Length: 181
Image (cartoon, rainbow, N blue to C red):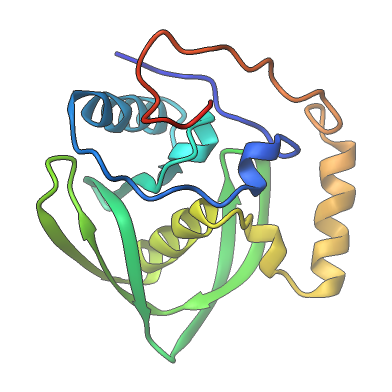
């Protein structure tokens, strides 16, 4: 099992646009395994590579008993919206109602470079949009209306992890696909 520490709100990697994956190799498969193990151990509905400090366009998901991953996602969203509670492993313990598209068609690749399409509504749609946002340096609180965002920022400041220094970044002994962790 390769459970890794999850980066917390305030870490600059969470605000950085992740780079597309161009090499589908053993190191990428290790990253997908680390993401999956960490997500399941947290537990969470999804986890994006930047949350482990890796700036690559990769995320995992665990919705309704289906565990999967998507690399270099490209989303098509429905016009119909949903509004419901959303949380994030990088903002532990906080949940706020967030508007999202009701449905999504996500195209990308699996860890072997094979094209895949994931379609979903409700929670799966919310999860895919949330994790893709992480790949774009967006955190779900960025999508809140002004009043709710203000409440979220207050809750972050009051959280026992709020204001904590960013984790120490260690140099990986493994290949980082040319990306500094």
